[in-house]
Image (cartoon, rainbow over all chains, first blue to last red; front, side, top):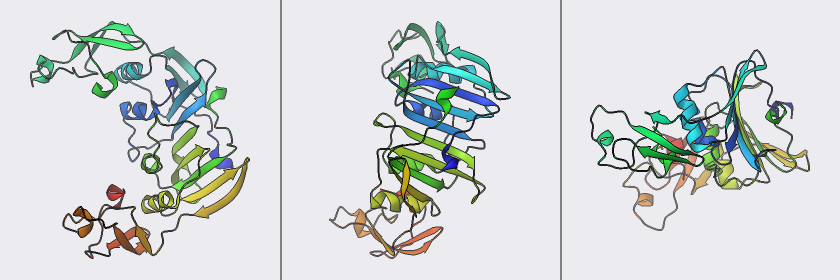
Length: 152
Length: 152
């Protein structure tokens, strides 16, 4: 069963230490729907981890992530690490890390918030805690609940 | 990057030769939502294949599939193969193969069909072609379009 092995990738990104159960949400964040895939993608769910008990891992070939994608991953997996592979080597490795303020990555949960009223206002939150992420809307002051469900 | 390797599985199922782009639909069919995963699951998308150009592969540990699940996979991937692994060996290997008649795995697309009228009637289709699958409702005689969207 040779074809079961995941071979090393030449260029791409490995998103490691994803919270168990969050891999499919990560795929949604990086816009991997299945039929739009042009390069290999692999997903491991519930694999043993040294650091956590179990983790998920997502590997995408020929892709590097934008800063908004990385911040969205931080919202659902504050301990995730990003490994950028270039020519089979880990060229960069870093932990996701929410900035003090996030813009345009989550929607406010308050339907009356100005950011939900068809005004040209980009949602903006101050990050009050990173793990678990606690976000406060800078417009209506409300703390966001169900953060993962509000990712844009 | 040792933890990127997909190690062989002791017991479980490998769904191989899935049509490219269908892996996430296969996960839905076998009810892997992410958070409900208790054993390792791995998904490969758009990997090179000898038989097809590219394929998807899904491996689930400590799981064997029921006949309805296998028939649903046949609807979206008529060339898929199922490998049942027991104690690290391939104990069984077979191709998915739709029976002449399928019951209770897809809903009829006709909203007026008796099977969609809250009557205690299980949807039933005759299989007129297997690849691509062409299903005819035995109650209203309609040919099902968008089969993948009607999987129960």
